[in-house]
Image (tube, rainbow, N blue to C red; front, side):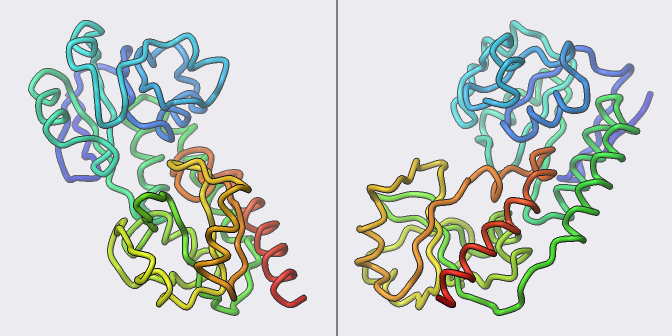
Length: 265
């Protein structure tokens, strides 16, 4: 019986290639579809929005942190794929008592590439996943970033204000862009306006998710950061760690060009 090791160093024994997969994370759901597992994926979260046409046909099993445990049990998957950060520990532990479970734990690009290869292996798409991971790696290796080291504050929420700090995948992507995180705090801290003003950020990035920042929020942050450039960004490019990473380097290249050009001007 084949044994697989997930990113939390757990062993998973699978007697056969999974035919009924439940995915608990949007970026990993998209990955499964891009690996050609259209029929095998039977359950996804309500936040799994890509690829649009395919996710509409799948059973929704709640949110990433509010799973419908009974519905998942009814689906009777032979593999569930989740993530340490995005899913709630108690619910995961309950489901682990009933189904084979593969968990990811991702904080940078290397972890993401490892996840892609290992998910491909456990799901019977090893060759396809290897090609995908290699293509993503090459795209990032070809990313011609500047090395100016601008300090960037990346906001994911307001009321309360929350930023992506150290040890997050977003922080890893900021580093790939040549930026320095303006907040030397771990994970996703809540900040007061007073704490924010001490950040000395050159650039403030307002993410499209999980909070849907828009143009109407820019004046608010201009008052908090009067000397910084405020920019709305596509949160999927900074936080989705599956096959969407193929698109990220081109997006980062254009974003960097806009930001540095505007700063110099």
